[in-house]
Length: 328
Image 1 (cartoon, one colour):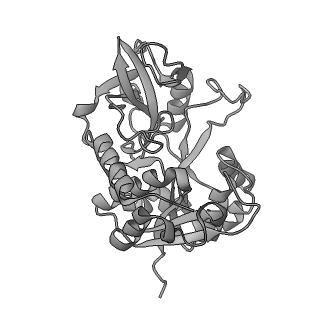
Image 2 (cartoon, one colour):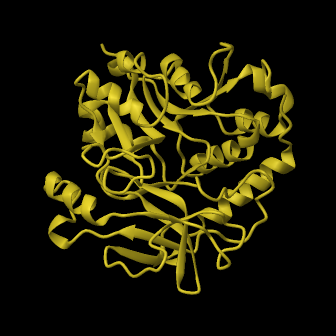
């Protein structure tokens, strides 16, 4: 009899992200997500047992488990490669890697049952950038749409050999799969942006990603941090969602892949621009700032099913701060 795979969420934490770690786990548990959460950390940053130094972490483990703490002792591991180390040494069979500053909008457990994961054991998510619209000087002839690994789904026993090829972040993950001619699923819905509108201008500050069905799955506050570093008392950041629009005949996520890709490559162009006087305190915005492109639509935040997400995250962050975030 084959044993059931051990499924769970993996996060890498460090002291500055403790409010985000707390808020994200509290958010997951509020959806009745029962997945084991592995929290990895550098012992050089957080001590041998960070439970001794953080009431908030103690509360998570005692009240919102199951949670497993995994220390990294290896002195050459740090930064981006701590993510690869954690994935390679995780006790989980099927892993959802989640950056601590990601905010899921639902229980993530169902991802393990989707055909895209069952058939390949690896799901990757796209970045804003592609060969025709890049900030990383990718060759214009490259067929590769750039990858982000703020979130990924992986069946570890099937792909341990790919992990051994990795010594970095982002597209190195997918290149390891391509190098070994291993199949994977790339999410086909381009990332949207959450932000605010002022003076008829849009400032996107959060990357919004989708599941294989094309439904919003999580928000990565990678531009303007919503929580942490004293930011949990700031004014609302999310007032609108700006999303790419396909023509009706290309709208289905399982439609003609080549035609969908071609349409995206020609029309999905995310700009980066300064916040200027319209958005004081925001050094960087992204999206269609003048909101004139027919390829994007704008949805008022209150009309979204998870319109209370920002308030809930900030409430959880304040709760963590009240409990105590002191670390090594």
